[in-house]
Image 1: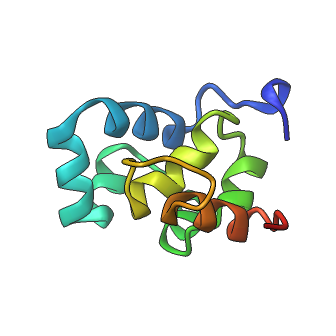
Image 2: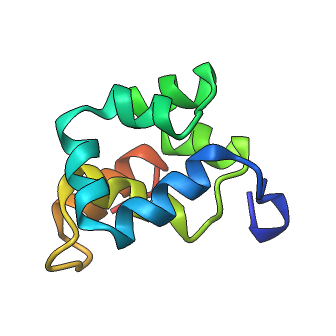
Image 3: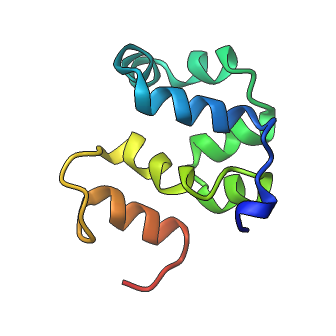
Amino acid sequence: MGIQDTDKTLPSNRMVFELRRDLSRYQAFQQDMEACMTQYGLTDAEKEAWRSIDIEALARMGMHPYFLPQVARLFRGGSRNHNDSDAARLYAEKMRIAT
């Protein structure tokens, strides 16, 4: 699951890219994740991975490695990004990384 495995056509990649850069899109995601996923054209498998915050599954589908921790930040906040932040702990848990 490295950069060579990135699927540039995976809708989740575009969604993360845009959600992290556009506050109004991020707020829409927070209010209605289902509508947001539909708007971006995510597959059923992608939607299920997002619902369960299955970062490993998104990696296997071809999400860009840079975006994987961004998924955790979308759910647990992006401020105060440090090794003990809520987002970092969520990422470690979902990727089965020892902390």
